[in-house]
Image (cartoon, rainbow, N blue to C red):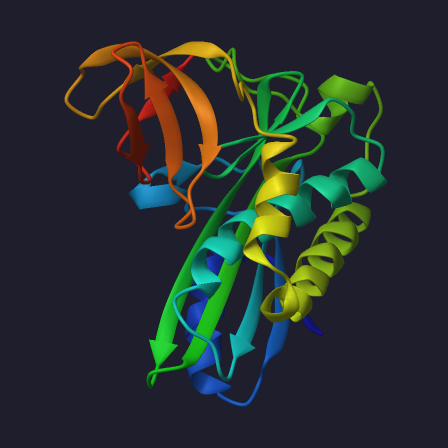
Length: 243
C-alpha cells in the first residue's frame, strides 16, 4: 500500500480522487493529512478536524472485476475494520451506529464516508474517508461527541492511529470479494448501536415515530419495526435515530 502524507488539504477524499485520476495504475493507496480544512461527511455534511488533534485519512482500493453486491459489503466491512483498529490501540466501549458512525460510550468518536466510481461495467474504485477524534479535550456545543483522549485519559500518536486504521481497512478491502455478506452482517449487527431497543426516529420531513432496530438488510439499509407492526427499511438520510 502506497502512503501519502500531507501537512494540510481541504479533504483527503477529494485529494485522493484527483490523485487517482492521474495515477490510473495505482490500486492500493492511503493518504493522511495533519490538517483537513474542509472535511466532508455523508450526503454533503461537514466533518470538523482540529489541526493536529484528529485523524483525517482516506484509503483507495480498485476492484477489477466486481458488481453491485460489493457495495453493502463495503459499508459494513469498512466500519468493522475501523472499529477493530481502534480497539487494537486501546479504545473501549465501541459500537457502530448505522450507517457510518463510530461510537465510544454512546458518543460519536468518528465517521466514515465511502465514495465509489464505476469504470466500465465491473471496474470499481472505492475511496474510504475516515475521521477520528483522537486528542481533542473538549467539544463546544457538541455534547454527543467524544475523543480517544476523553475516553482513555491519555494522548495518542496520530501516526499510530493512522497506521492501525489504514492497515485494518486495506486488509478487509483486500478480502471483501471472498467474504460472505451474511458473515459480515452478523459481525456488524453484534455491535450495532441500539439493536433490539425501542427508540425514537425522525424522518427528513420532521415526522417522529417509535420503533425497534431489527438489523441490516442485504442492501445495507436499516430495518426498523414500527409500533404499528410494520417493518420498514431506510437508506442513508431517510431516517435519524434520536437518543
